[in-house]
Amino acid sequence: MLRLARYLKNYKKESIIGPLFKMLEAFFELLVPLVVADMIDNGIAKGDKTYIYRAAFIMVLLGVVGLVCSLIAQFFAAKASVGFGTELRDDLFAHMNRLSYAELDKAGTSTLVTRITSDMNQVQSGVNMILRLFLRSPFIVIGALVAAFLVNAKVAVIFVIAAPVLALIIYGIMVLTIPMYSKAQKALDTISLATREGLNGARVIRAFGRREDETEEFTEDCNRLLKLQKRVGKVSVAMNPLTYVVVNLAIAAIIMQGGKQVDAGVITQGEVIALVNYMTQILNALVALQVLIVSFTKAMASAKRVNEVLDLQPTVLDQESFRLKNVSGEDVPAVVFDQVSFTYPGAKEEALSNLSFTVKKGQTVGIIGGTGSGKSSLVNLLPRFYDVTKGTVRINGVDVKDYPQRELRGRIGMVPQKAVLFSGSIRDNMKWGKDDATDEEINEALEIAQAKEFVDAKEGRLDYKLNQGGKNLSGGQRQRLTIARALVRKPEILILDDSASALDFATDAALRRALAEKTEGMTVFMVSQRTTTIQNADMIIVLEDGEVAGIGTHKELQETCEVYKEICQSQVSAEEVGA
Image (cartoon, rainbow, N blue to C red; front, side, top):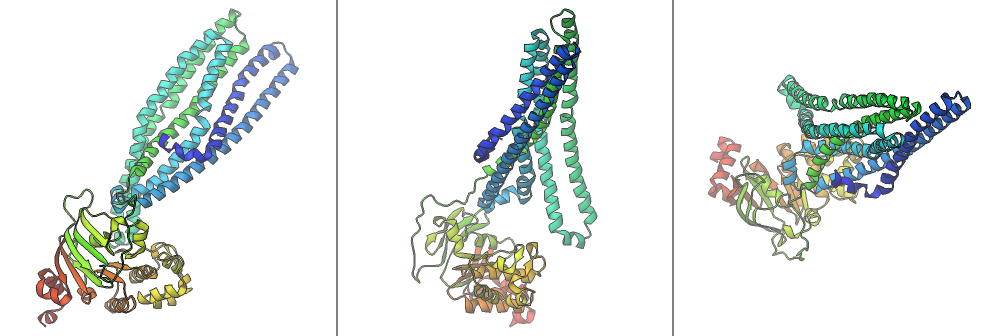
């Protein structure tokens, strides 16, 4: 939790004023028992109504001033905690965006969502409670002890005995509950994952008639969380009765000892009442402290989880000093893979092994292979989503590690396997490729991507609003828009990672023809399962189990590469194979 205190640096004034006014409120509250004692001894005992009214007015005045101080403290504590939460949440989200694919794969989407929402709310609430109660409760406890000694030192010894016992109870419960709250938050991660999968896969769940099964599994996850929360609740709820028992025993001891002192003429009846009031104030302060401890315990567990995300360091980093040189000329290859091997973090086997090939500028490269052969892994190394394990990947003669990531990815248009669109207009989505893109540039990209016809048919055309994830479009329409989005920026290298799988053969052929005719000078990588999609490519790379099984044109590979020949034969009729 202390590591996150730096996010309060812009709210130092609020972080000081809030607790300060809470202490002022506590100070005025500590004066009330003394006024009550004075009222009893000098007003009620002597029947002086004027004195009683005067004392009552002072008590009301102390209450009003305390209320004003409390409101001021609440305002500044809330301002500081909300500002703290905003800055930490922004920093956490920015940090997540800096993480490479490897760290995102390791952490998992559901737990990251839980940590930036539920855990962040717990931490922010904990900061608010700390600013409001962290100084107030101890101040009242210590102030009541001091005041009790000023009233009568012998009776105040009871306070000295009771206070450490109360502190021990609170500390013991806090030690027991912190790990329990951590387990509860992990169980919440599981529920977040189940919810996300259930909503994203709703169509599949219904198609397979698995709604009851999914509901049962979700209920089990919820019951698991319920059991954990009940367990931690049983421990934390023990704080209240235990503290009440100790305090009530202390009050009984004060009354007994105070009665003897009154009989002996050492103290007055009003002073005994004041001592009882101070013990009651200690009880109330500890009840408030109990709320703080519960909130702080949750915040500690959540802060640990937030820090775990902040401690994830991206493995794909920009060099401290770039060795980037302007390399130009037609003879400079667009892309070179030189003895490249790649292993996913935590994997035992290589995803890619010893890949070497050269791609000239303006060439179209087809990449094909069986499922799990490493096609997507290969193209993910170009924009440096992952770093190679061995060897080098060079673009325009420069190692991709020597490019600033922003510049490297600015040269590449990436169309992933899963078409991802964002809520907003079609125009907004197209401008992800280029912030200042004109309608003419967008329409040109839509035309190449074979998307202009259906966009023009939509109400509002470029202003047509997309639902979250583009759910109000078909799969093929979403794919064509993601291709257009990549084309808007006119990249040097265009990567189509099996991004035409939802297109019919006619649209696929029209797309390939448009790419060949209207993207002159652009180097294109096409990952596909269809041989018809890549058969006209200048170079085809055939992968098998992460290794190159063959490189060449469609005609050359049919004669020299058995793997490619088998793929072709599996996708055409017997007559075509015979021909």
